[in-house]
Length: 333
Image (tube, rainbow, N blue to C red):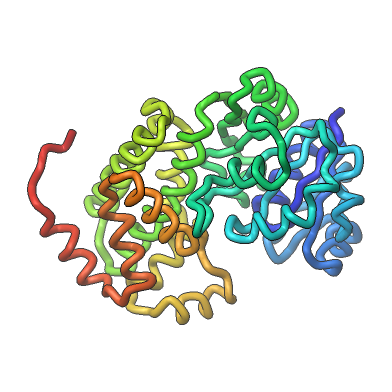
């Protein structure tokens, strides 16, 4: 039994905490709101984020960060990517010095263009080999419903990746290992932006040919960026690349796809946010950072650039389509 802490009680944080508890570990979840921590402890439910899901008895919740991480051998972080640095500054001294740190987040930090594992290592002072990443086709509600799911645990230290693999292996949750942290994190971050594009196409009432084209070309620009940053191209053909991309671009459970659909219907960013109860999709938060990262490295990412323009520069979905379809002809490979 491993003592584990999950910082973040949203849908993915709660689902991953359930996986850890079902795998036989002692798990504490930190909730930003005291009321949510009380609800989890009293009802074994998180109705706002995972309605109808019973949580295991081995899972506890607290609003006290120090209590959550005390004695933890594994600390997983599942909070919005753009708030990671601010929160970690307050938490860094509380985290046990020998704990494995696990990023459950999929984004690129605005301003620094750092991946989430880089932010964790920088703020906590942890060596990069102490930081692992979990990424894959991991829609939280389906995992909480115990539908069979595979994922990737990536860490530059292969032995640590295997350790995390064992800790989070549950009957319905099958982790694979990978040492390509760069590729796994980029796959997770860029797919959110591509899912917004798919949602926009869905809102414009286009069909499967259009979606398949966006997914395929989105994977191509993700791989181009990843290869320039030193990732293994094969990673993008795996669970953290194609697998995550397909799930996020096709599922109505994907906040990015459904948010993009509202943009495709003609809603503004503010209107779409209001319609989703004030929640902004991660791809909206990350598209500017992903675009900045690509431009810094001289990589062409036309879908990402178009999505950023729709979100922040007044480009209409119709103009986005015309812009993408009128690009100069070229070889596919």
